[in-house]
Length: 289
Image (tube, rainbow, N blue to C red; front, side):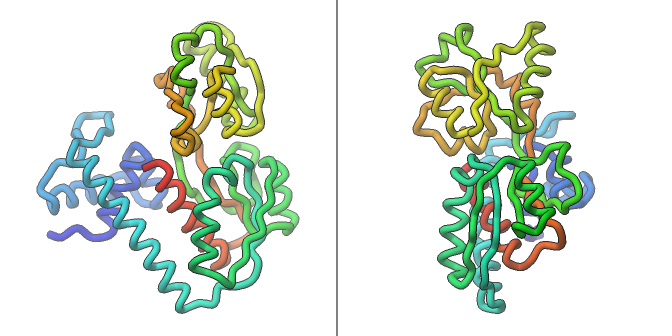
């Protein structure tokens, strides 16, 4: 049996999201469907892609190699679909978007560049703000789509999950030995200040040493690199600043706090909005490679 696109898609989603359940949730199918697809892919490739241990999701060496290749295949197919769609439809006009500062800095350059190249008649107007402001802009029809990190305060809009991941505590490589003297750098945005305090208190039985609230994950990464504190940032931000030589600390603690990047809209997504979502999904996967 030759693998089909669903086998590839379900496997790579499970690999990128770190489990069967989140892949099932993203694809709106059962966990059994994801497991069966991976099993059929293993049969097609004649290898074991996962370590089959109970309550553990871990790729084998073959699985890691397959994930890298399949990721490229999926991205190529996504790009092909976009090019064909561009031939069939006249994507044009202005797409009003708002997002968080760190998302704009990390995810949008590649996405906007691709849109300019493949959809030259489509213009994107991008605004920067906090989650509450972006939610209000969507509800008041000031923008067509908002790209934010999901939290419990976002209601009354439609959500499309672009990516799910986890947070990390990071510090500059040369400052790793000085952890006891460093405070924690967080944002007010959720997940952030409150989540860190609760998790740190539960794990270490002592209050979290929050030293500074910084309203940008990118700035936090740079401060952590300079030894100004232990940064609390999402994995995609950490991956995007590899030149800062950050190292992860407290992995058993931080990876318990997960996040979802979501697109929010007042109504059904327009074809222009779907173009943006497709490009942002590709952008975050490229960063996390």
